[in-house]
Structures are given as structure tokens and as C-alpha cells.
Length: 475
Image 1: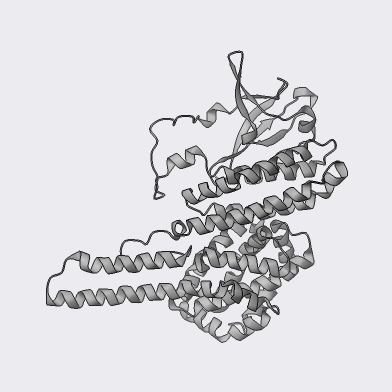
Image 2 (image 1 turned 30 degrees about the vertical axis):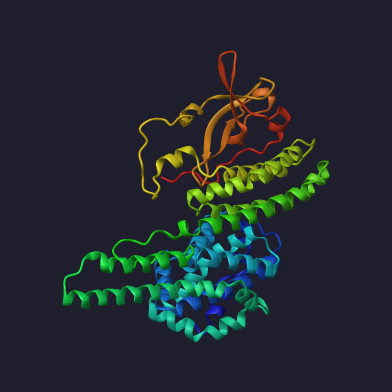
């Protein structure tokens, strides 16, 4: 076992690895990335130490470590890539361990402390978590006893590694209390179940008893645990599983996300007001990239909400999203707008589309209210098969054929994200594939002929970046 778990984590998080994480998270300032990691790592360890002080909390940590690949630390850098997949997995781990509210408090507090937006901070925390769990597992093993002893013996070292002022900020945010409440509630729920079961056994020894007399207290205990966990992993307190926690966090979680997304939208909208020419458009690139990073993390959190809460979220941000998209269209149409700015705009518009369209009709029809598979007998009204779009010609507003749809890109929420159009040699542009947001394609009718039309002009298509599939399907 390491003499100091903080030192072991620090030794693993080499400057090269931190640089890779920063690149995936969209953090260009290397010094800022190092400062963020220096604050986030001991903050995560502090939460784990609090969690490990409770029997069920230590077991949750042990389970999380056991689920990781045995060679996680050896392959971490190579599996990081640029897609943010590792960050998503890590964010799910943190949410499972600490609860959604505690994770949100952690990201917000550390982000404000080091001067980093919520999106990049969420991604960075997500990538750090598998690494930290891997080091903890290597030093203490995946057993409950080893984890409990490790964190109990090194709480002082973890606290000493925390930057000055961060510990107080985390305490004020409620992160440490929320992180520990998951383990505490799990223990209390099990104690309640055990006491209720023993009480039922004692009563039944005196006289027969109907199942409802002992089932009712169990149901109350399960309901209390479900309500208080607020997004943590459900704890089994009876043969019937406790309902999943995300449905209990719906209104407050969706309201908080709506506020954070709206803040990001307003911020980037304000920064784009002064964009009037090629030079000012180029200057706006960093802000667009930052907004993309922030919305990436927030979109991941939105995807964890139940359907009703996602719909509320979409409605709350719809007006702001529409205004921002209009501003983005204006910047995109400026003469000489750089290709990388156009690419960032297209990415941002696609993220906005995904947030205001919470899941495709096909996704909503293919799952039942409890998340299990349901079955569709016929095509729902207004829906069409994806085959209706493949190999279809696409025209611009002038009636000129600009290309053919070659593929559809499906987002993480199940909605259609973009359409990949093969430009070929139409309009003298040259052969390449471009991806446009699916919402920008309209199904129209002209002289008894149905046409797919988009607003893309010849000049815009010439400057549009070629599409590259960064996540090809695996066999």
C-alpha cells in the first residue's frame, strides 16, 4: 500500500496525460489544466474518503473499482481519444458514487475555484475518475477492508493536498455532506429493513400475519431512500428493486440544467454581437469552442434525465436556443468566415438541436414508461423510415441540386443529429462529404415532386469542412 495516496495519484497524472485530458476537455491553457487537476484530484479523493467511512459507501467504491478493466491504468491514455467517451463513463461513475446533486456541486465549485466553465470541468472530472479509481484499486485492492483502511489512514494527507480555500468552498457547496449521505442512507435503509424483518418475525411467531403488515414498512423505507438519494445508485432493500433515482430528481435537476444551459447560451450570444467581419469572426472561435465544451458536458447530464424532465428542459431553453441559432446563422453567412469557425458553429448548432429535441420519435416509441422495450406495430403518424432519406437528392433554395444524402448521424440521445451529404461534383464544388444539422433539411413539394431542401448556398458548401466519421461502428 502506498504511503500517500495523493502522491500515487499525482505520479500517475503526468504532464503528458494531463495535456491529453485537457485537449479532450477543450482546455487550451496548460497551466489552467494543471491547476484544475491539482484541485479536482484531492476533491474527488476527499469525497471517496467520506464515502468509504460508511459500510455501504466502501462497498460502492469496491464495486466501481471491480467494474473497471484490470489494465485500466495501462490503457487509459490510448483509450482517451478525442470523443469524450471516457469522460462520459467517468461522469456516470461519479454520479453513481456520490449522486447527481453532489456531482453537480463538485463540478461547479471546483470550476469556479480555478476559473473553468462547467462543460470542461465536467469532462475533466469524468476523465480523472477512472484514473483515480484505478490508482486507489492498485494501492488498496478492491476489497472493502483495504479501502476503508486506506482512506481512514490518509484523510489528513488528502486534506493537506487540497488548495487553500477549496475545502471550505466544497463544504459550503454541500458536496461533502451529499457525498457521504449516499453511504449513510444506504446503511440506514439496510438497518431499517433488518429491524422491520426481525420485528415481523417476532410477531409472526405469536400469530399468523398478513403480508401487508410487514410489506408496508418496507415500502416506506424504500420510498424514503429513493427520495433522499437524489440521483445516487438505488439500494436494494427488498426483493423488489427500488425505482431508479433519476425519476426522483426530475424537476430540480432539469431546472438547474436549464439555468446552466441558458447561462452558456446567453454568454456566447453576447460575445457574438460584435462579430461583423472575417477578423472578428476569427476572434470568436475560442468562445465558440468553450461553449461547445460546456454544452457537451451539460448534454450528457441532460441525457440522464427522465423523459418528462427532458421535455421541460427543452421547453425552457427553446427561445434562447432559437435566438442563438439565428445569431450563429448571421456569423456563418459573413463573407470570409474561417472554416474552423464555421465548423464550430455547425457543432454548436447540432448540440442545441439535440437539447431542444430530446430524443427522436422512434426512441420515444420504442421504450415503455419503465424503460423496458416496447413494440411498434406500424409507422406512427408523421414518422418515416430512415430509408426515405438515403440516396435522396438535396437542393438549395435556388432549386439547384447540391448533393445526395449518404448517411444519417444518430446522437447519444437517439435523435438524428445530422445528415451527411455527398457533394460529388455538383455546382463545380468538387467531391467531398459535408454534414448539416438534420433540422436544417426541409421536406418540400414542387410540381408534384417531393424534394429535400436546405439553406446551404454554393459558397457556404465550398468553405464547409469535410465530414469525418470519428466514431465508426465496431464489429
